[in-house]
Amino acid sequence: MPTVLEDKIHVRTPPRQWRFDLVLQRFALVGIIVAVWWLLSLSMPHFILPGPPRVFVALSELSASGDLWLNLGITLGRVGTGFVLATAIGLPLGIVLGSQRKLGEFFEPIIPVMNTVSSAIWATFAIIWFGVSNGTTVFVVFMTAMPLIITNVWQGTRSVNADFIELAHTLRMPDWKVMVKIYLPTILPYFFSGARLAFGFGWRVSLVAETLGSSSGVGYRLRQAADLIQTDHVFAWTITLVVMMAVLEMGVLRPLENYLFRWKKEAENA
Amino acid sequence: MTDIHTPDVHTPDVHTLHPEPGSRPAAGADAAASPVAITVTGISKWFDSNDGQQLEVLKDINLAVPARSIYAILGASGCGKSTLLNIISGILKPSRGQVCINGVLAKDFTDWRTISYMFQEDRLLPWRTALRNVEFSLEAGSMPRHERSARARDALQLVGLNGFEDAFPYQLSGGMRSRVALARSLVQQPSILLMDEPFSRLDAQTRSLMHQELLRIQQLKHMTIVFVTHDVEESVVLADRVVVLAPRPGRIREIVDINLERPRDSTRPEVTRYIQRLRALI
Ligand SMILES: Nc1ncnc2c1ncn2[C@@H]1O[C@H](COP(=O)(O)OP(=O)(O)OP(=O)(O)O)[C@@H](O)[C@H]1O
Ligand SMILES: [Mg+2]
Image 1: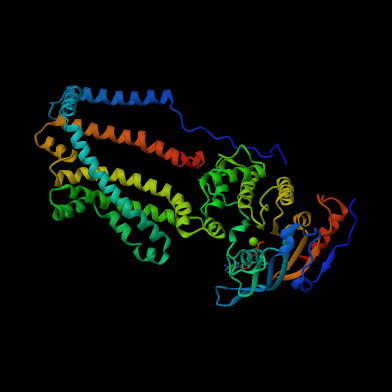
Image 2: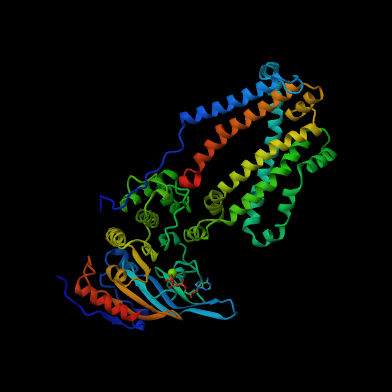
């Protein structure tokens, strides 16, 4: 038995590290933006462009009263619900359409049509059907996210390697195990990029829906602040949203993706 | 040294019903109870081709593979070698004829998990580590996870890959990937191992290393091996008996016993004699 392998292992490059200079660059960028903003605000009335101190005060007020967290929670809940529904329906539908050629061919034209319908149209329908309620926002998020998820999962299902299926066949593996062990892992990266897109779109769209058909949530509060010409509050809400998206992206999605898809070559991952 | 035989050439029909054991006598109780591992009787196969005609790929193949022997199926590209192996493994139905495994008709045979199939490509699942890839073979049944993992570890050790359990396929070289695929075929402790040009993608050096590995493991585990190749040298180095297929439609041209002791050095004259003889046949 050969103890020395003639083969060599390809050394794996470690996942991207926290680079100090990069962090520094990011802080510098934020610093410049705030500085420009501050300078501009000095020469304008505060209801047009409030300066950073004013917005900071508004932000701490909103946060202290609990207003910020409550509405953020409400909006997040609606986006989450719409997103989970879109996944629950889009994932199996995408798999079925992708693996059943005939069905796929028949329904193929629907997806691009659904993708091109503007969210404002969904919002209009939602108000007609659901009025001013949670349902409106959830529906709009759902209708925006679902086609994105279906499209991606569909593509993923088509890329399933027939050789792997044949391998499972020679092992006499039952169909449901083939689904779980071969289809699902193949689809996962496609699903993930679809879901990510869907979640991002869902957020933006939810704000529109809330300004039109809701009496709570970040979107509603944004419109309210604008109506009352509380420009500092508008800024405060906007900053909250930007920070939250950044945290979700860097704190949750990126690490999750790095972990789930660590089997991919570094070049593919980058 | 080995006594030099002239290659024995048999006509196919001699072997149809009463196969003699190959150059290595079948030994042990198992072999005595069931001396023939695979019987192929009158197999023909047609495919529907695009122009509506039927393409005859295999014609009247008869074969009997004794338990614990190593058979090579040798033939030019496209002569139906993979098709024959797929029919034996049960993933393809023959148009005519039948296959018996351990004396049981294929349609009544249930113990398919004692048969392993090693493909031309390594077919490693890229999202699984080496260990989990080997485990895959055991996941069709209901074996508990810790047992699967223990057996997979043993199989990796058997092919000389201990220490690489947690490597993903992209981190392994071609030779190592092929070892993982071999481990995956061996982990279910098959009594029959079917291989479709398993080492054809490897460089010459690695391939001959894998040949030695395979023979070492066969000595250890005594499984029956049927492998497909278009590499004459490979067939002579490994097999007890070489089945030469003629193309269009694929049929048995000749069956050649390789009566040489192992290890067989392909530069030795008695080995090259076989190689030349077989080369003339395909
Ligand atoms: N599913 C199929 N449908 C139609 N024709 C097929 C099918 N599978 C194989 N064939 C044909 O049968 C013939 C033999 O194919 P096979 O794959 O068995 O050859 P092979 O001997 O394994 O060749 P190679 O050495 O190149 O792998 C080829 O001409 C091929 O085109
Ligand atoms: Mg082939």
